[in-house]
Image 1: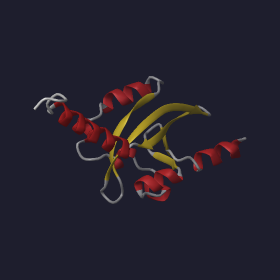
Image 2 (image 1 turned 180 degrees about the vertical axis):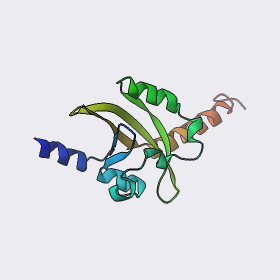
Image 3 (image 1 turned 60 degrees about the vertical axis):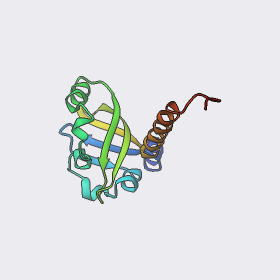
Image 4 (image 1 turned 180 degrees about the horizontal axis):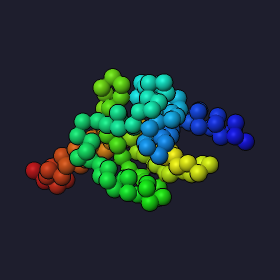
Length: 139
């Protein structure tokens, strides 16, 4: 059964990041490497904030994130990150504390939502533009 779970995580299209209690990365799956350009060897022992994009602090309340996790609760939210090559991207993340053999780990499952954010922006632009048009039939 353990092999089944391991393979499920490895082939997942969502990024999986596991950190220790000190927020040092101990595992990332292949989707993480595909999304960020970083391999496990490059990020092992690093804090996931190496991905933090420009102005990310303005978009996320990191104190709330950590208070939630330390209290033993799951946190959900969006990150504005930057990959190995400096390209920015959006991720929706679900992070949960997990206790294994008396040790606490944090498991993050993250989905790249950059295309969705782009479509939302385009839709908002088109909606605003449509609002400025005269009513149908007006001259």
